[in-house]
Image 1 (spheres, helix red, strand yellow):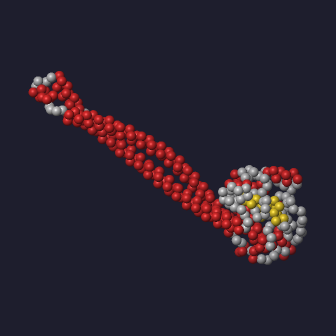
Image 2 (spheres, rainbow, N blue to C red):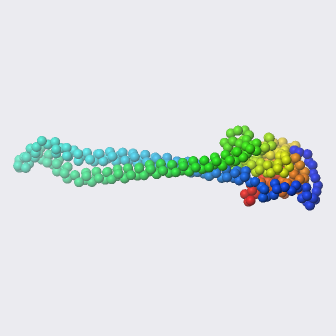
Image 3 (cartoon, one colour):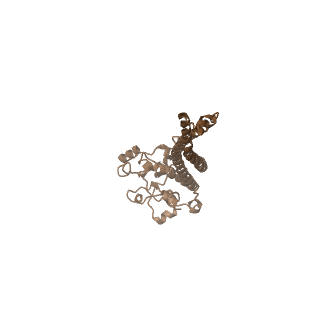
Length: 351
């Protein structure tokens, strides 16, 4: 709402209005070049897919960290199992060592001859005990060995699954990143040819990240950071990325028709600018914080467009919707603002 240009109105009947529009191939739908808007949508889609894949990779990496802890636990359990295996094998080893270390069977000779001494009986009792527990020792040893083998297999499976899963996701993210870079590069080159400074990282003060249109919705009306807005060919004016790129496309067609760029008096307005306009022009501006200008989705135009039923007004009215730009119904009557135009991404999506 509200134009900074003079309020000049040209009254004309609808039938007369048709006559003042130049007939040109540019004014036909067939000649409309949707390249910029299509590239912008592709870039945004690629960026969204990349963001989702990156989130999936981070989630998987989080699961891998959890799995890694499980793996570490299994490895510690494996170490304990190794120690248990060594422990249960020790008595068996000692029996074998004891028997083989005996130089002779003299200690047992008295027992065999019937002249048993207390020492011989103790020796024989030890042997009897060890031999009697032999099967139990061997069984426990086998159980410990089986547990160790199972833990080793589980640890190996976890390790392999972690490495494979992360590698697959990382490859997918890399592919999507390259695809996103290609699309954004194509769009960047097209915009640069039209005099628009573009930085997909949004670092420069007056640059354009074509993938941040949806992200701009996260900010309150009139408080959108510069990194989320795109400059127009008209110096000093910015819009939300999708609206800006669509307007740039329309501006190129307009130049072919009229030999000059569309004249712009107002585009995105921050909250302070909305308050200033509201107090300076009461009744001709939305309440601060509720204006479409504060969303980066509205323009006030000049250069003839502000004159109702001028050739410029009629051309944009006839062709604007191809680019997502339209003159809202309220602006035809109350308040009457022929200079005010708004962007609706659904208009281009439907074409």
